[in-house]
Image 1 (cartoon, rainbow over the protein chains, first blue to last red):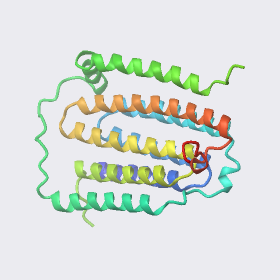
Image 2: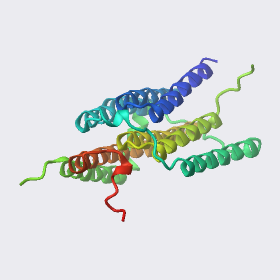
Image 3: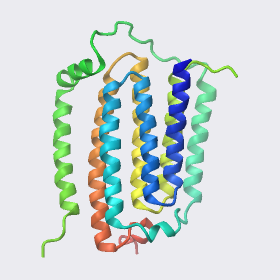
Image 4: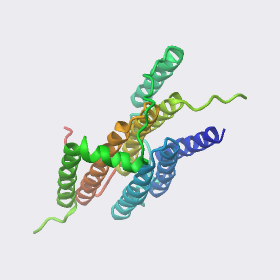
Length: 169
Length: 104
């Protein structure tokens, strides 16, 4: 019962934040709405027993990315843009595309919900906490992708510095 | 009203809704910063999906995948915002329909 209530409150937080993110006029308000949405997703992670990802979501997304967004909003000075139109002039095709995709999802759900057969979960859960088991897996089985990810981050650091720096005269 | 117990389907519906809202934001907004925020929403929808299946199947592979998704999202946000700053420095705007250098 508590799980159900928590799920619905986090889901509400997530969706409400998302809707406000795409609909508010001022970009700073959008960033704050994004924070609520990301916090809702973090709560969902906790409900699904993904404690490590919960922490990562809080630290990296809410603490890192949104601060980066606010920083960029400050740098690009959006005072004038806040007074102008929020949406593009070409709204019909996107709305139709999204409505079509949504109808497709609803169709899948109504047709398939009775015949939906997910593979049975493995009952033998290993010992240890979430972080412990995750690190075991990450540093043994997924060691190569982990190292490649570090390369990606290096490239991203160099790229963002190169993009954002002033041109040397 | 009888509430069903929370299953994977609930998470899938939530994730689909989040994806659609994010897509609307990407396609409709004019402000490039808000478009980047909408991309983050889409990536979060993917993560919700991955975590839901990871918990249902009692395997941690989905969570590992979500870690990598978050890594890529962070890299994308850093580079994207760097591009936005460079763009603003050159064009004095972040409204995407005023940036039409490649259009003739």
